[in-house]
Length: 176
Image (cartoon, rainbow, N blue to C red; front, side, top):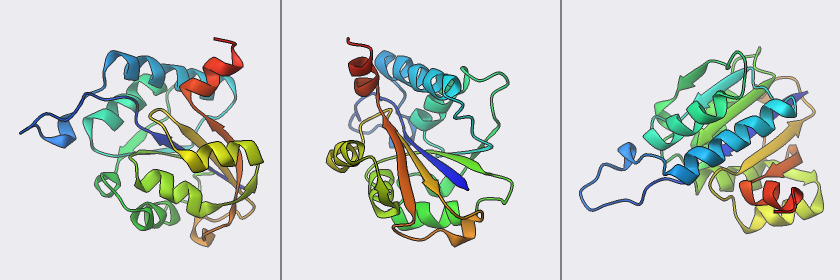
């Protein structure tokens, strides 16, 4: 079995005219939300074997704050192709994941990440699938399980949505 964790970067500062998009940093809420999702992952045994992160400041920071929940934190690789990637580029990066990465975490951007999740999921919790179909919010975490044991066998509609978590769904579960 393989498990894919798709993690959209947390809330970042708005793009300003003339500002390099790659340098946009997280706002305070984004740092807090990234930490909450990291804590959720750590407390639910969702520790990745391999972490692939877009080179954008907001994705790097998202992983930094989420990774703090793990002792020790899994090592991460920056993958240039993940920045502003299409679903097909993301798909290709995942297919090339090493064999020892049973649980793979990708920290990247919409719309590619959202479109990839919808492309991969064939089954799973209906309510979670409907929520995911609507949108993948900042700090959204999509957990997809696959019956095969080789990333090279990845194909559309081959996954089962195991869980879809966001800061909003964590608040709802806590009665906030």
